Amino acid sequence: GVFHHAEVYLNGELLQVHTAGYTGFTVRLDNSTALKWSGAANVLAVRADASYGSGHWYEGGGLYRSVHLVKSPARAFVHNGVFVVPQVNISAGAGGPTVSGEIAVSAEVEDLSERFGAAAASDTVLFQLYEGGTDILAGSCKAALGAWKGERKLRSGSSSTQMATCGIQPTRPLGLWSIQKPTLHTVVATITSSGHSQNVTTGFRDAKWSIDEFRLNDVPMKQRGFSHHHSFGGIGSAMEGVERLHLFKVQAARALGSNIWRMR
Image 1 (cartoon, rainbow, N blue to C red):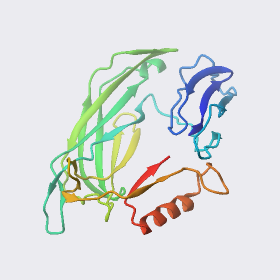
Image 2: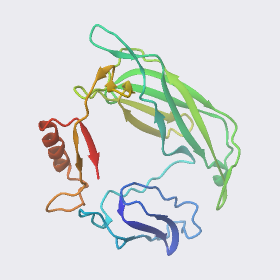
Image 3: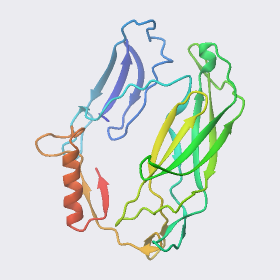
Image 4: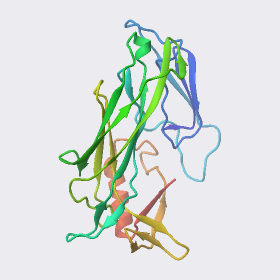
């Protein structure tokens, strides 16, 4: 979300360099030697250098997507640490094909308890599958976390990560994601001790490639689409918060028969 070569500084200390303008990234602040505690003011600065050349379209420069400050408890999921495997088995049903078998879910959990003088006790992660948004519970499972061992030294203690993995057996038929009906589901992962949670939205489907064709949910599908640029006339590349323009692009592409999207 920073174009292009980004340098992130905290109180004058260089924390991280990120050179890909089209990918988001995360910068840790709590292991910086420059971080001021006890209510003191901290200055976070980002330098963006767009002088490395560009493509044949306008790529812009600077922070053109949202920036968030994330505060987490001592035991929490790592950033984007919850994973759901969308590839599933398909069963025929009266109302159409549905999901069958277990849905594989996992999460990476980080523990910083020792930094705050607390014992790193064992724990569990609860995964809950909701139909659609977060209204109808359609299955759950629990994964145990074992003993913690310090693996990565930070400024005032150690940090350790563990993977929690289990399989959710749906308690009700789940609709598949398709081009015609893009049904989505939500998996909510929660750490029992800290209550820290992350949500993942996903669509379950079965996709197969062969030398002759591509099949989605066992139905042949020809892919038709366009190469879209992330800029728009009049506002350039700063399109964050202008959802109506994104919607217009999608609707116009679909009206022309498009069923795939390639962003540049």
